[in-house]
Each structure stands twice: as structure tokens, then as C-alpha cells.
Image 1 (cartoon, rainbow, N blue to C red):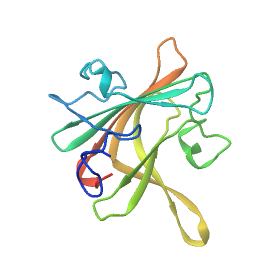
Image 2 (cartoon, one colour):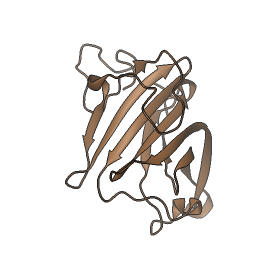
Image 3 (cartoon, rainbow, N blue to C red):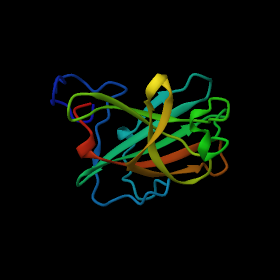
Length: 170
């Protein structure tokens, strides 16, 4: 949950491992996939173990004005990028994904993902189901960021910006 005490969240309950309590940011982070302009707040990170030994995802959330910012670091030796930008719907050629599930302001549950086939700028995408169950990739231009391979390590870092107006209570 982004904000405790909104909707069904009880502010007296302790934050769970998947609750994100964003830091108030004094300035806008540059979307470059680096954490050098983020505040040093070790207790604000959420750490999630991956399915394989040594894999983990670390997430830091922050807000500035009308945007939510996420800085994510995935570590492990099985991490891969997409074969190409067009491979997002091809399971055989797709790499790692960061899926974001959220409640929209109208109460609907939405999902989008971010993937990359090279380091640099990324955008949010979602999969829409069209006629006869055909999947179609839909760009979400409001979600922007940067993806980079970690220097000298196995893994990647991702920095994202999402407008708060597209997020509901969770």
C-alpha cells in the first residue's frame, strides 16, 4: 500500500513486506537508473527474495509533487533482457519483467510491466485482450524510466516515474 489509512488499510497495522511507504523526495530524481540522487534511507528499502538462490529484488519508493518514483534493483545470475524491443509478447524471446499491479482511481485493478532489450529509456506497457482472445501490447506513455545493467555485477537497476493520478489506494 502506498499510503496507510486510505481505503481498507488500517493505519494501526504494521507495514507488510509488500507495502511501500514512499519517502518524501526534496527533488526530482533524474531517470537514469542510478541511485546517486536518492536519499540514503536503508530502512526504507523493501527486499523480496527471488525464486532461485541468491536472487532478490530491492525497491525504494518516493514521492515528489504529483509523481511516484521507484528505484528497483534485481540481483542474481539468471537475469536477462529481451531479445529485441518487439519481443515483449514472445515468451521464448522475452527477458525479465517488472510487473506493477495497482488499484486505479475508479477501483479497477490494473497491471503494467516494464522490460528492456538494452539499457536506457523504458516505458510502461500492458497486455490488452482483443477480439478472439488475441493479446496486444499497449504502451503506457505516462510511465517512464531508465533501465541499466549493474556495473560489474549480475543484475539490473530500474528507475521509474508514475503519475499519482493513475494510482488508487493500492
